Length: 445
Ligand code: NDP
Ligand code: 2IT
Image (tube, rainbow, N blue to C red; front, side, top):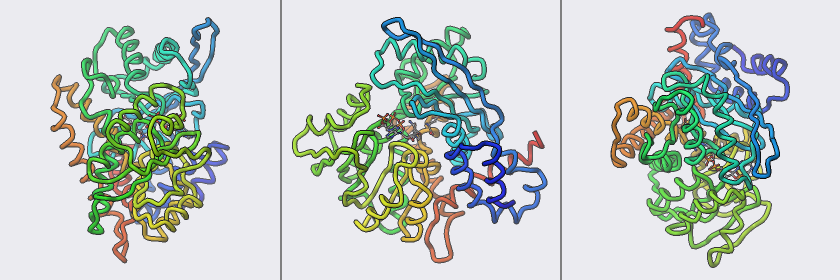
C-alpha cells in the first residue's frame, strides 16, 4: 500500500472533497509501515474497504419558518464502518456542512470509537441548516422533518447518532421525540438525551473533561501538571465549556474563548459565573463571542483573529476543523507553548501538526483527546441497555479510566526512538490494528 497512490485515486473518484482526503492521508501515512509488514491486510483489501463508507444517505429536509416560508436543506447520514459495533457518531448542523466534511468526520470516528475500548462503529451525519437566529419553534420543526427521513436507517443496535456542532440537548430532544412517535419505541437510539428520558450524567461535560484528562496525562510524561498553567481555548460551545470547567478546576487559568467573530482575552481567567455565561451565549443562537467582553470587566475583544497569538502554556482548539494553521502554530511555539490538545475534530492543519512535531511539542489529535464525548455516549448506551442510571461519580471514573487507556495506547504505538511520543501515529496505529483485525475476522463484505 502506498498512501500517495490511494489518496490520488480517491481524489479522482471524489474530486474536491478536500477534508475527506486530508483525513485519509493523515491516517494512511501513519499506518503505511505496519500495513506493509502485514500482507494479510493487503490481501483482504482492508484499506480499500476502509476508505469508502458502507453507505451514504442523502435526503431533503423541508421546513417552514415562523412567517410560513418554506425552506429546503440537505440532510445526510454516512454509515462508515460497523466492524466493532453499531454505527455511532454525531450530527452536525452548520451551513458549512457538505459531503466532504461529513466523510472526514465519519472516517475519523471509526478510529476514535475504536480507541474508546467500547464496541462502537463509526458514522456521522448532519445538515447545512444554519441554527443561527432561528426560533425555538423553527429548530423544532427542522429537527422533526430531519428525523422523518433519518429514522428509517437508525436504531439502538444499528446506528446511534448524537450531537456535534449546532446539535445539543435541545435538538436531541426534538429528534428523539419524533423518533419515538414514529416507532412507538423508547429506546437508546440517540445519545446526549435529557436526564429524565434516558440520558447520562456527565455526557454534556464529557468531551471537554476528557480533553483535559488527556492533557493531564500528556503533561505528566514531562513531569508537569495543569496547576498555574495559562490555557488558550478556541470556540465557546459544548466542548470548550467542558474543557474550561475542568482545566480551571485543576488549577489552570483559561484566558481566551473564540467565535467566528474573533476572540476574547480575559486575563483574570474564565471561571465560575463566566463559565455558566458560556452556556447562555451558546443558547442565544447568535454565533458571536463578543458579548462576553461587554458582560465582564477587564476583558478585551479582538475581532477577526484567532486566540493563538496570546502567550499560553497549553492550547486547546475546541471550535472546528482547520482553525489553527502553520502561522498560528509558529506563534504558539515562539510564545513557549508546551502542549496542544485537539478538542475539536482536526482543528490543526497538517502544516501546523508538522511544526508541533518538529519542535517536540506535546500534541494530541482529536481522535484520541476528544474521544471522551463518544465514550460517554457509549456509557449512555450501556446504561440504556441495563435500564439503569449510574451516578456522576461512576460515569466520570469510567471516563477518566478510558482517557488514561487511550493515552496508554498512544504511547505504546507512538513512542519514537528518542523518547518523543508521536500521538498521531500512536492513535492511528492502535485504532487501525483493532479495526483491521476485526475486518479480517469478519470476511470480505
Ligand atoms: P458547538 O456547536 O457547541 O460549538 C462549536 C463552536 O465552534 C462554536 O463556538 C462555533 O461557533 C464554532 N464554530 C463552528 N464552526 C465554525 C467555523 N466554520 N468557523 C469558526 N468557528 C466555528 O459544538 P461542539 O462544541 O459540540 O463541537 C466543537 C468541536 O468539537 C467540533 O469539531 C466537533 O466535531 C468536536 N467534537 C464534539 C463532540 C461533542 O460531544 N459535542 C465530541 C468530540 C468532538 P459558531 O457555531 O457560532 O460558528
Ligand atoms: O465527534 C464526536 O465524537 C462527537 N460529536 C460525539 C459523537 C457521539 O456519538 O457521542
